[in-house]
Length: 470
Ligand code: AMP
Image (tube, rainbow, N blue to C red):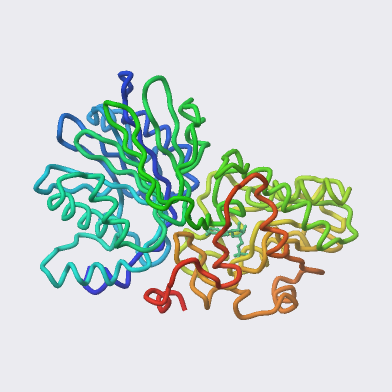
């Protein structure tokens, strides 16, 4: 790969992170493996695990799903006291093995590994400054930038805690981090709390995970979400917490509730499932329609479709069958492949659809490709009318904080009105949930939200990265 490609290839990543500090004789690598399995929806492109064993860090990472990257032989080699893991999914640019995480470095004070979910908005500037002073990078990852800053401050200050706090003053963007040193597991959540990270416990051992569903998977008890700007240090003596932004501004990503997180997770006090159900109910109030059957786009629209049905009284049914053995549509690299893959992924249930007026609910429309294909499929299956309802507002702006929702020019709603989109997808009507309505759906979340992709109002200055996504 040409050197300049590293910059162009700067990934906008969707990821999941997981970590464990063992005080009960756990098999930490297998434990992380199961945790990553539960976070697979957050990234299917690469997976990796690093374990800390008597001062040295062993790791294995590769392209592929968790069960493709790891087998018994590999896991048997990864023995240690603490471990971190990462799943990653990126669509911008080609995928490269060197961008797989955890990133592991050797430096003056030993070894250190990091796994990152999120996206920095000033990493190009930081990277250039470091390169000007001779630093060499192996990847286009933000994580490597952070590792370099961390190792420098660690050498200067001597303490990993201080190094992390200094790094947090330099980097801008979203980051949920799990860091592994020779004797500690550390969790860090960015000062705006954009990406989620929670703490759990099993026996005397501590666990960190992007989502609470991964704690459930390993039978760990949920303790709490990390506070925005919090650093949690786990070692032999237990857990120590440092709050760097006391009662600061929080901007949790609203898209975690709309699409990204698993419905069985709780984030910052709110149930993802309940938020989606509520979004469907509000959608039925805001955009009512006379119809015979409500169906959801599997799996992303199913919960909201149920909410729509409960509120409207229109029966809920299964109208589309999804091929479970296929990855996400977006994995296909070009538009023609993407169109075909929709056909392979979904099929309409003719017996349920024929002759009916259908309300078809999905969580979002990004490019409009899948939606148009599905509407067409429903009509071919004999639907009399297809009314498309979307349980979030139009996605008009790019995300700079770690959700891959295309560049501005690919977002259909950035260039077209709702009526134009309706015509493009050949639906009989199209209705979106309002932003005000959506923001009321994560009931119990005691925080504000980043709504940048919906209204262009970002919680941080994005001017340094704006060009990448126009
Ligand atoms: P399309 O009609 O092609 O815009 O596709 C809409 C579908 O994309 C919906 O079912 C969404 O759930 C799904 N979607 C939304 N955001 C993403 C994302 N970041 N990655 C993959 N799929 C997404």
